[in-house]
Image (cartoon, rainbow, N blue to C red; front, side, top):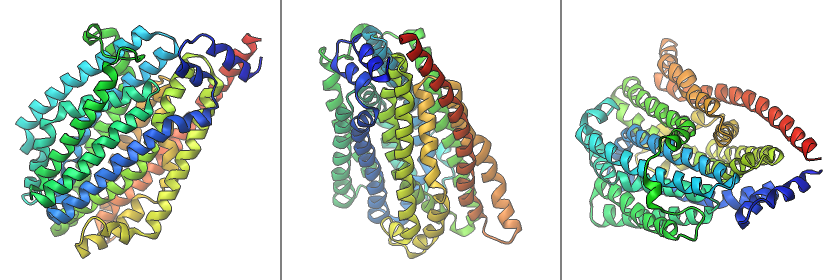
Length: 478
């Protein structure tokens, strides 16, 4: 039996058209079908983040960008819990669909929504109570604290909307509805940008206006997503019985979701070290360097978010075909996604190397801050052509439910490589009579290179194992 015949025979087990396509359509076309809406949505979200920073830097104050950068660790903490539930639930729903178990898929979705609401409320409560001490811990100075506080008070107040909106988006992609997820993201982005301009430049509401625009944009998108899941005709939909938390489902969600949770949590720790390190090594210019990091972070995230679009497009294809035991299709979509991610990161690498000053000028009209951005951008992104494959690898292990490997890769890049480099490399630069800030910038590049080598080594082993399983499955089918 050929691979094509095995695909067709497997497809006969399913009644819905989406499942049949996941089992038979060429994986390259499937990836673009699923990834394109995710890429558009991710690009739109990243463009919004960039526009948000531009509006804040030019419409509020150059130091407001530094205040925004101070909020990144707290935003990462919130994102960590959201990713834990959303990614974990999405991977489990895809596999349940591959197994033809609709009841379980609906129960997983209900538990995802219940967890998002509970976690969102807890983060709002504790975040607002301890906001100032938290921001001080993250490196806020007397200059940047007011900006960071004004922004996060509004963001935390709307945390439940944020978590449930993103949770529904993950479920839409995992159940084969990436276009609907893209539409939700575009609604949020367009509303955000329009309201940003109105609240900051029109009403003069500053950081609070920027945060309020974010939450109101997500409210519009939330309504759009919720309407889809209200329809009982859809494969996965709202069900009262599914809202009852079940420990077996929660354990399954967490088994996969802990990987992105640890990744985001580590990101929080890393950003704290970066902000505090920049304040220490930058001296009188510490706040300016924190602002530079805010700009570098936004630019890096644009390329990262596009690769995440490929990761999200790959996830339901990999999860379904693992559940259906079509292992040759699993490795096929992995290789194609890896190549696409590498191409994207290489493109951004070239742009940053050629036009760093022009990119920095988009965010601020402060000549000194623009000057500081140029070497930072070039150093941080100098190994980006290899980073895309590393991200695809981590997402792949999540999709095939190899939670331990995914968690290991998530934590290793930041905790094993980046954190020690952030602590010791600036001291090496200072000892050699150079600016310690450059030690912080080079820490990113070196840790990315080391973690890519590790990820590729684990991936090669896993692909060989899947190839053996694919050969065995074909032999048994004959």
